[in-house]
Amino acid sequence: MNQGQTVFSQIMNYLPLYEFQKCVDRYKGNHKIKSFTCLDQFYCMAFAQLTYRESLRDIETCLRATQNKLYHMGIRSRISRNTLANANRIRDWRIYADFAQILINTARQLYAKESFGVQLEQTVYALDSTIIDLCLSLFPWAKFRKRKGAIKLHTLLDMRGNIPTAVVITHGKVHDVNILDTMPINTGSSYIMDRGYLDYKRLYRIQQALAFFVTRTKSNFDFKRIISNPVDKSTGILCDQAITLNGFYAKKDYPDKLRRIRYRDVDTNKNLVFLTNNFTLPALTIAQLYHCRWKVELFFKWIKQHLRIKAFYGNNENAVKTQVWIAIAVYVLVAIIKKRLKQNHSLYKILQIFSITLFEKTQLQQAFTENIEIPENESLGNQLTLFN
Image (cartoon, rainbow, N blue to C red; front, side, top):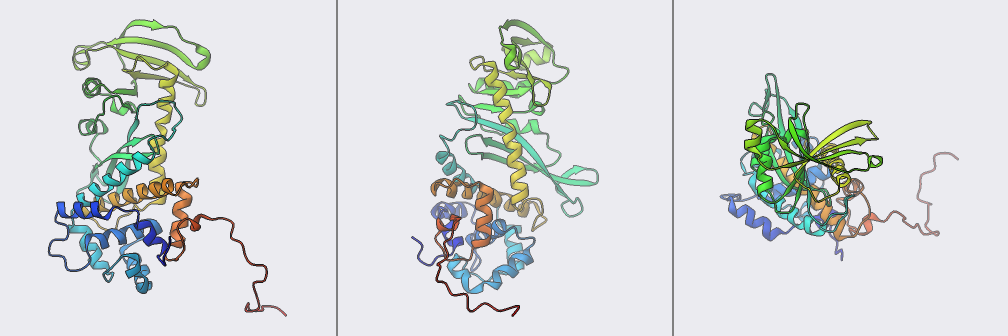
């Protein structure tokens, strides 16, 4: 029940603060800190994400304007632009990365039975990356082009609930395929990737972990057909083959057989060729799985549009990673609240409602009520008269 708490405080009540303190202690985040703790920093940055603040000065101005409400929001220290900038610069970003991972594990449990368009019992992940452009003169550590800086967000997305289970932040020059060396592989799960991740040695690592992958072939794909399975071409499946790789190094990197599926996409009027180590699922299901990969693109588009990760409050690497991880934590927190309150609203709508009600002392569930009844006998006599 709401006991005079602001909406912001009620949102933060969903955070496991005991686990947050363990993350802070792990990296000594509050060492020799007398005021403006890591929790204060998290609250300020979460406020900035929920309300899409433009700069540190913007954060300072908005929070100081509501100084009498900060204590009830959980912020115990006076807000200063320099203090927040210094905290972002020097406090270990891994505090917020580890805490975001705790929220991610909670969200995955809540969305474990969520449907994603294909009826499968196994967990399905989509792996992709997105580039965030930066000014090279302001971010010299973010190498990308000769006169251009950028960072990459390499993301492994759980298709049930669109929850980012693993995120790696690198500078822009890191090739996507290298992330396969660090991504966790779970036995029995399926990993959907585009052809930028086509590396036979790394794909064989997935095969040896008893997991499955679905990707696309490149134009110079060289193979030898073993057998062709019968297909129903009215479904769009043109061929379903068991193959082996040609070439000395390709065969050395991936000595087992593979499955090649050729599919006609009626929406784009293109022929797509898929490569997988899954010989159990129907060919059409493999094509549907790859089509679901576009959810990771929608995830990137969503967080870029509705969270603050395209412009940064600090220039050093620690400040950038801190801001990105807190943005991910906020995204997952909103997803957790959506599930626990059993809301059918989209994450976008929930985020918009939060952004304009943060300082109101109303029950969180009531904030989503669309039909507000106005008493018929309510007096309007105190309204100013514009025209007689």
